[in-house]
Length: 107
Image (cartoon, rainbow, N blue to C red; front, side):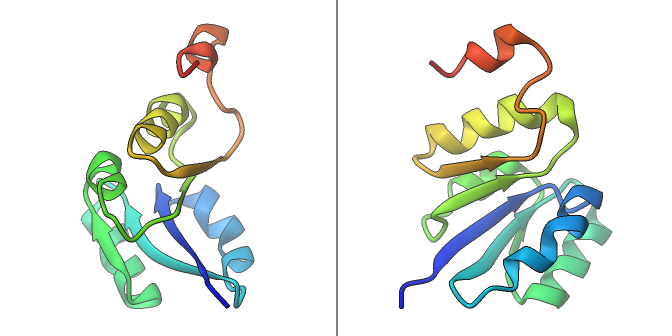
């Protein structure tokens, strides 16, 4: 069975709440991005996965199929656009964007 390789944008509360859903045999968390060094360190220990200081850097990683965007709300739209620009599928924590303009930007 081919596993879905997931990169997580934002290693804070939103990810912590949904992390149990990623403990599924059909998926593998392979990377995470967060500007906080301590969050990246904990993530590496728990998931034995790569970590990045920026979402854009993580999105460039070729081993990621899908990016789960769990960053602060005001960063959802730009981080989703970064993932889409890198050819990744995207799952965005709500809200997708703070304004209608930001939500339409990717069209």
